[in-house]
Image 1 (cartoon, rainbow, N blue to C red):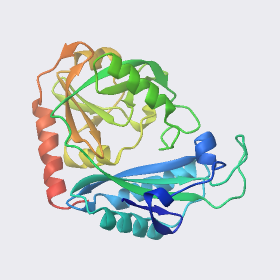
Image 2: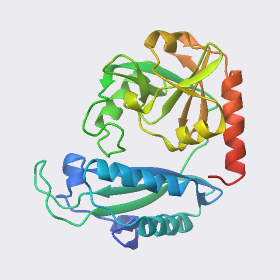
Image 3: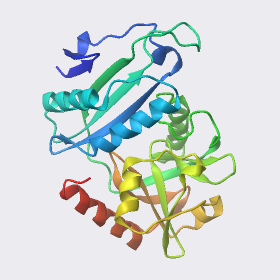
Length: 272
């Protein structure tokens, strides 16, 4: 039976229980990180913990130290003994009232792991009819309020796609439900800037360090005419897009192949 870290202890999954008054359960008041396990070890953990701290600060959430969280992730990774998997680190505001206000409670900390299937070689995406709010209170923070993504992914699945893409309120490309987006436009690799409201993805940041990328606003027309495109995320790495809406793409394009090779070299070297 899988072991789960809960508030300082490794326990069996059936013993990992939180209060029905936990504010994360009641209101989505919490933050999280998904960390990929490669060859049994968490990849880019330092970067993930730094982003969790930024997300927690953005919503005013107390959280344990980086050292404590790193130890918890390491303990779960060792117990899970997975070659390729995912660790989910979740921190909520702890016990709260049946409303939006917080109590002065200790945070709830949960770390769990699961095996990951091999991803398909390429992915189809659909642009959803709902906008990301790039000026919202939690824009750019990785919170556990994911109902919007659940609805968007269901829409994508209904339209024969594997991932949903959001525009922002200005009508510019923002991000996927759990991914960042890169496009080949005019022979140049382009990705939306953080000002678009997209999450500062860990893999996005690594790709920016690996290859030349222009960060600028991307219109819907540019997305629809892109010569190639790919998604990036912790569990996907660099993942070619084979179809945008109804338009098939040749994949992987040369810019995608270059980014994938550079990222694979980084992974093989045990970076960052």
